[in-house]
Amino acid sequence: MLQNILIAYGLDPQYYQTRPFGSGLINHTWKVTGGDQQFILQRINKKVFKSPLDIAENLHTISVYLSENSPAYVFAAPLPAVDGRLLIESEGEYFRLSPFISNSHTVDFLTQSSQAYEAARQFGKFTFLLRGMDTARLKYPLADFHNLTLRISQFENALVKADKEKIRQGATEIKMAEYDSAIGNVYDDLVNGKRIPLRVIHHDTKINNVLFDEEGKGLAVIDLDTVMPGYFISDVGDMMRTYLSEANEEETDLNKIKVRENFFAAIYAGYMEQMGSVLTNDEKNLFIYAGKFMIYMQAIRFLTDFLNGDVYYPVKYPLHNLERAKNQFRLLESYVAAEPKFANIISQFQNPAAPQHARPVNLL
Ligand code: GN1
Ligand code: MG
Image (cartoon, rainbow, N blue to C red; front, side):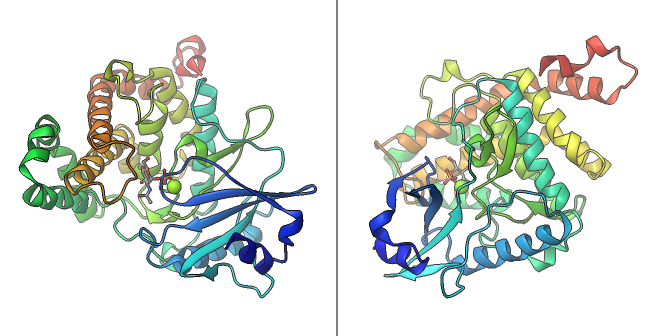
């Protein structure tokens, strides 16, 4: 099947090698290599993305906007096939080909806070460059993706339907989900009160969605399926969720889950360097909340999938989604405990009178 796709893009399968690439949970990705040419080929998960054409349209709209307004910006938009289509359907599956940005690489783990700074700068820059675009021009490939109110009600429905054994196995996490539901109330208030604006948001800011150059400087953001209108707390929050702890969401030894304050400072510095002049005061006041919002949402998404019988996230063993939920609740606990320190870091950044040596930039 992949051969037909290559042909649709004018690539002769005889001369191109196709190898699995990356570690995403949702789409399938391959790297296509032939001579000195390199591409990224992806099969879009149609169970998740019911309308892949919306993704193609969004990326096209954004690509045109960026090439007019910020021509030097590296945007890895999908390439048109020989007949001009931006998405190829084959046997009911959708594929697309994008350029592979040369001399770039991704990382799966952050070892230095400078990586968090670079990544946050890249995600901030993306939203910054698109600040003048009317978000109404974009489609919602995943409506309600980060709608916490909905995620909480999906959790509640799963709880009603789940079998007794699962409820017993997940009892502690179910209690935690209920205990932390105040995080949902803050979200309800800010959405209902229209307190923060919709912006063009990436919605999947984990570290392997950033391309780095050979010197470790950020080059571009990738994995653009979930680019759509949203709130900045999604992007900042998912960086907190995925950069602060050295151990990632797959770690089952909960003692290894600890937030690193210097990585928080790095996310703040990188994102605000780009977005500091754009965010409203209400948004700035939600910077710390952003982390709680995303960590809590991911915890209940894993827990909900466990209760539903693992219908969304691929699992390697029966309690995998429950283990992931445990991991995220531990991260939430560690995050909440560090909040006073985060507040201190932000106030040091905001106080230009602070002596240079006392400013958290030294932590980077
Ligand atoms: C999914 O496929 P991947 O790994 O980029 C999920 C994210 C979750 C993440 C958790 C469309 O992203 O929301 O944060 O798994 N994407 C979708 O690992 O559900
Ligand atoms: Mg993704």
